[in-house]
Image 1 (spheres, rainbow, N blue to C red):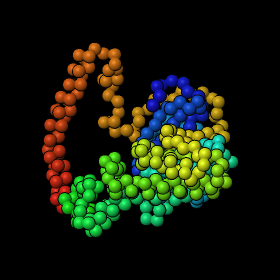
Image 2: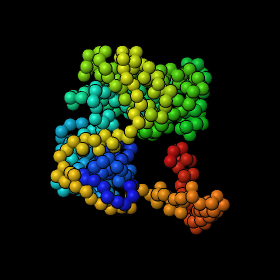
Image 3: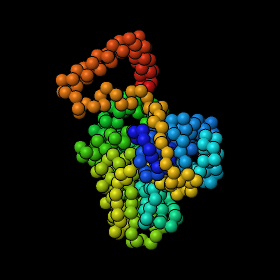
Image 4: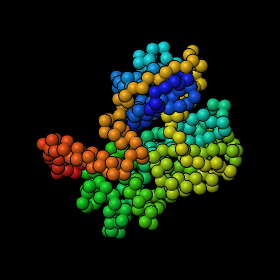
Length: 379
């Protein structure tokens, strides 16, 4: 949050909602960040009307009044979805100008040339846009029908591969050991029960084990990632060809948790894209998608534009107390080293004292955890 002071109108609120979390950002007319917060899931397909309204009210209570709002929510696929979001916005911010789209468009942001967002996180999708506003999409059908090259598919292919080779060769591979440890199992048969109860996110989380095995040159893991990179690149090129003729200049933007956190894999995807699209420009997304929501809001007409106002400094209720900055340590770089060490030791002692006061509750929680592991091996 910015320090208390004078900022330029209009105040713009950008909201980006995904399957795991929703990020909100308030900026002033010059793009200076005033407030930000993280809230619960914002996938429109997974929220009923009450849940959507609760999410937006939580954001409204945590932020100063904006002049215009831009929202990019996963699952906002058509005009009916957008009307539903605008209706909820109107109940929280009366007569507020708002622009509503899906999370892919805000992740790509405003474009000055044909661009294709290549997204691989828990799921996957390719979304293309021309400077004239025309768009195209490949994928985005969910983990049952699609999600090629996603964290979910990589994790699932890892599971399928290790049991296939175990059946064929009678050997449990290095990747198999990693996946078994990650799922809390002791032997291959334990994977059957784990998969039966695992959600999409849990399977996608296993992708990190495939990447770790690939770094150690595990052949199975390397083959899985090679196929995933090719799948993403093919969809990216097909998406671009829906908008322009093959060979025209296109920028491919790699985004999502998998591509942003696995640079070797991102490089492989980029190489595969260049094989399929001559002269392709490929880069990894640097800015947060929520800034794209801010950008689409800036395109709306705002009555109070050009005026100046004072932003009230408000407590960010979206943050837990444990996530807020400790005021006592705000100037560690300016205090004597001995005092800094004493401060750190004092904080540790205080934490231990507070934990000791809650020892009974901690013991009960430990008992619940142990019981859960004994019953089915999962929390």
